[in-house]
Amino acid sequence: GQQVMQIPQYQHVQEGEDFTTYCNSSTTLSNIQWYKQRPGGHPVFLIQLVKSGEVKKQKRLTFQFGEAKKNSSLHITATQTTDVGTYFCADPTNTDKLIFGTGTRLQVFP
Amino acid sequence: EADIYQTPRYLVIGTGKKITLECSQTMGHDKMYWYQQDPGMELHLIHYSYGVNSTEKGDLSSESTVSRIRTEHFPLTLESARPSHTSQYLCASRPTGGAGFGYTFGSGTRLTVV
Image (cartoon, rainbow over all chains, first blue to last red):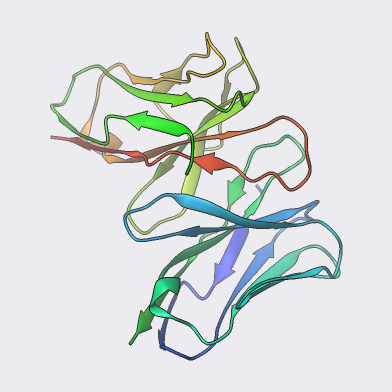
């Protein structure tokens, strides 16, 4: 079946360092969404990418959709302790079921 | 803040009990979803609904059932709770149509079956 894998599974960084998580799908995606889940919290929608090769920025966060629409990445510049959490990519699918990736847990040390 | 509410927030219950987890949203969204998430792990879709009287099973096999009698309400029921049902259950909703709309999640119910 369809799989959405993320690497790395965990990442520990020093505050101020950059961070990147990669999302890979076994099938071609129509869109890709990204969510952030703080420890003990619920997923919060960050952004949706639609076009092949699309790049979007939100302050220190840069989201990219691969040319073949089978992968995506989230890059955080100069991490802060407020960035701590698990970042999930998710495939909305053609039937509007949101399939989540495996997630990358980010820990930021001050 | 999200207008989707889940109750109870925490629940500890004995094996064999019947329980209903409540989920309500005030946004008029047609589409609603239930996810199961073990601590630190990915979310698995267990049920979803496209609107009133519509319910579908998700990708993860679940012994729970759902109903959708009203647009705003999407309860999940476990007829006989077992320790293997211990997990967090997250409810979400989304409006029909509109590119770029993300899913709005409730705060979740943390269920422990002893």
